[in-house]
Image (cartoon, rainbow over all chains, first blue to last red; front, side, top):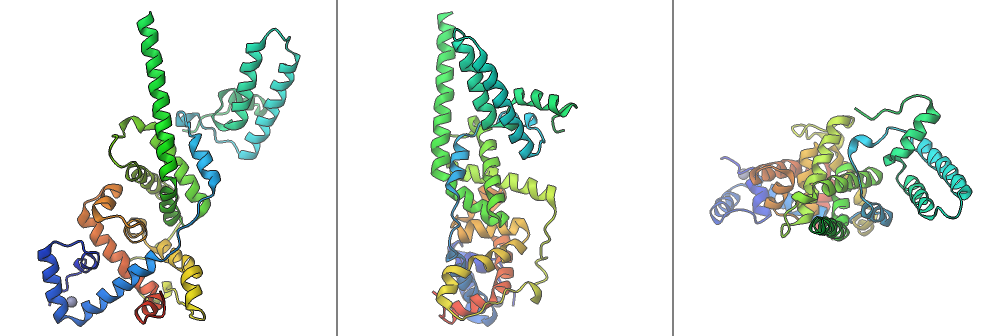
Length: 145
Length: 193
Ligand SMILES: [Zn+2]
């Protein structure tokens, strides 16, 4: 007697054609071992359906909604602590310069502020930061191959 | 000149529309993307990372998304691709060959409090059993048995024929049945749920 194998899963899921389902039903009437498998599969399905869904951190959605990846190769392989430290330093430098600018240069100030904001936000994607990093590291910061 | 400026403006507006649409779709489906990623990786941080990577990938490819088709399936497909790339790179996990259903992976259940077991303690044993499945089997079981997808939808996410979904699903289930034997038997005896 050939056991219907994965047709048994299809049978339990109600995913067979009428013809296949009839074949399986006929086999089950004759085969205690496949009947056993079908009962186990039904129990397993109930078990898996009862597993509580994991709860994502809402912070993830916030991250997802700012998705603006840019080309991959601009991502630098810099340790996160260094990137954060550098971004903070950059912000300090930029803010210091900004505060020394004459009040007439309003748009430039805006521009620099905006850049500083973006740099702290996504330091690993920031080209200005990349050159800054390569300066403080005293060796070229290279893109990942 | 004016026509050109007009075209540029409408292009910019189109980009903004696309971004707004993308955000709306992500917001509607991020939870299911996370659930899939979590069951695939077995780890909250890695799952979040994978969802983010898949969102970036989807954003880049968004012009190829056909409106009117299901965004969640499309996104899950991208996510699964990223996951497969990762597992190829990492190769750190060891899976139990599905021909070997003998004892040592079996997750034994204790039945001090079956109710509590079903509510709280199920996640750990089931996830450990899922982790032990080879990734392509794990993915099918998660999509069909935990997420409730049809074979056809699972096949679209995994880019394989529905027949492959059925055979992988069956082999994956047979392994889980052995590894989670204590729970399966308890359910059959009516001690749970
Ligand atoms: Zn049989």
